Image (spheres, rainbow, N blue to C red):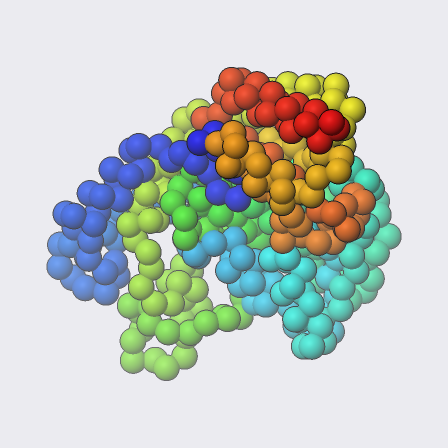
Length: 381
C-alpha cells in the first residue's frame, strides 16, 4: 500500500516509538502519580520526559502547561469551553475543522457569539479581515495553522501580534501544522495551542495535547482523580494534573515523546520543505491533466496536501479505485470541514485529498500520478 493519507494520521511510525511503548508495557507500566513504588515512579518520570520533549518543539518553556489529551478534538474542546463565558465573542474562519466549529456552535447555547471570517477560494485568511470583526466583547481568535482540506497556511505570527495588541486570546489548531511547519508559542503570541500526537509528530493514535499560557486559567470540562489533594472534593487547578483527570495513556505518551524527539532531530522545517517538494512535483503533473481540477494554493504556501477532483467521477469512487486497483490510500469526501469545502467551491461534490508524510518518496508521487492519468483517460473513453 502506498500511504497518502497522512493528514488523517501518519504512517509509518518510527520503529523506536514502538520499541519505547513496548518497553513501557512489558517492563515498568505502573500508574504514574498514583503510587510510591518503583514501577509507578518510573512511568511518571518517563511521562515527564515525554512532556518536556513535546513542549520543546513549540518553544514552550514551562512544560507543565502542556496537558496531554486523547486527540486534538479533546484539546480544542478543553480550550474553547474552558476559556469562554456567556457574553464572550469569538472570531474564527471558514477553513476550520468541525473540531472548532462544532464546539463553538454548542457554546452559542451558553451565550457565546461568533464571527466566521470567510477565506478566499484558495483558503487564505487576512489578519486585516479578522481585525475588522473585533468588537468590545471579543475574547478569543481561533484559527487553524493550516487547512486540513487545502493545506493552506495561515499568517499565524501576524494574527498573533494583532491579538496581543488588542488584548485578545489566541488559540491555534495545530492539527495540520505541528511537526511540519514552525509553530512557536512565544514568537506567535499563542495563548492556547491544540495539536495531535499521531499526525505530524509521528506518534501513536489516541494522543494529543493542549498548551495553555501561564497567564490563562481554564475552567475544567471534566473532574476526577488526579493523584493530588485527594481529600478535597474540588478539582485542583494545578497544571498539568488538574486537567488530566483519570489514568493517562502512559505507553502512548512515552511513544509520543520518542517520536517528538525524532521529529525535532530532523527539524519540522526540513520535513515541511521535503513534503512541499513532493507535493509540488505532483501538483505540476496534475496541472497537465485536463480532466483534473485542483484546489488550493501552490505548494510553497501550503502543507503537503493536494486536493483534486477527476471530471465525471465522484470523489469517493476515485478513492475506492485508487485503493482497490492501485493499492494507494487517499481520502475522498468532505474531511470533517464542510464549511471549508463551501468556501473553495466543492460543497456539492467534495474532493479527493492526497496528503504526504516524511516517509513518502518521489516514486510514490509518480505511481499516483500514473494511476490518476489512467483513471481519467478511461473515464474519458
